[in-house]
Image (cartoon, rainbow, N blue to C red):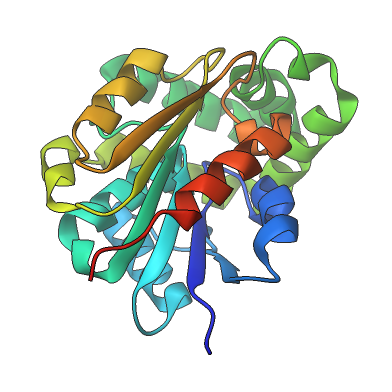
Length: 238
């Protein structure tokens, strides 16, 4: 009997390391695939790349931050392909003007100084809760992921984020089991925004992790894995 696919979509300037604890937990039961979002210039490009990574047939889909935004677009455009949907630390809204200004400033700094200071002094403090920000291993993981992807990927992903469209209304098209998970110390997207996402999904269940920031898969991996266990065990209607 073939295993179900679990397709994971990482966040901005993140890679498979973002989901390492989940891959370790579920790889023996699922065909776990972490999509490479380094290529592509738009969310439409990323959707096509994610579908290619998933392969044939239906799949379980989980995305964090930018990956969650792409997952939302996929759920609105091809709900029939998705068995179960998990949205982590994300939003379905279009970009806010102040975020575009911040991205432009960060791109300019990366071009002038390189990716490492931007990753260490801008991305890591934004992504991590106060507790995680004191952990050298967590900081180094964020920095390493960003530095290894580099300036070109940073610029492309940043531009794609600024051009994304609001997909919230289309979430009603997905009627399968859905998990909306976030940390209550997320500096980018509030618990209330995640409550809004969960309310738009007929099968949506919200989980809030006390003390976690924007990267709960790394900050509180066991709690995320527990939530994934429950989510993946929920039956899919034929």
